[in-house]
Length: 242
Image (cartoon, rainbow, N blue to C red; front, side, top):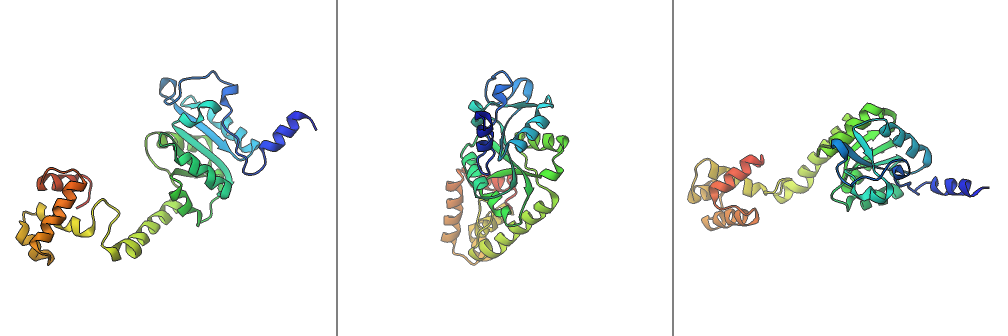
């Protein structure tokens, strides 16, 4: 067996992810945004075949600039290409998650329903099944992530919404919490403020003491760095909290 054969065998073992190798084929450029507004992309694949196929698809498009290995951590988008989400994939996703300047997308052959929670915890911004990963869908995925958007197959989006609904119903509601920056009690009091009620009227409607109402509104203003009640109402309305 030649040295080249040994190297190929080593890098294609499952879990030994190949880092981007675009640097061997293209001149180095400044990391971050690509030249001419192109999206800079780093590809992480679990074997040589997946790596080669993904790089070939992306290199053909002028909107994309593949990033060499030395600058991979500074790409706008990281694409992880795998057969399935296993322990090695999770470790890689967690490592990429620590890089807050790069958004991570997952191109996966088989996506188990239980992997949805893992995907959320790992900060994955977009998912595409490999069977649907033609060139146009890949480019749409990359450009959407670069614009701060997320992309999910329809069935996974439905499961994600069900998951969030279940979380709100079974975990947050019993504790008087919401997915927003306000608790249910805080949101209710600010809504009453927005309707023109004063402290005593809010206390009467919510069955809390006036002191509690003042403390709750003060806590919201302090936590969100709001100047007064009008500012609190404006903030809540702009962010869809009431």
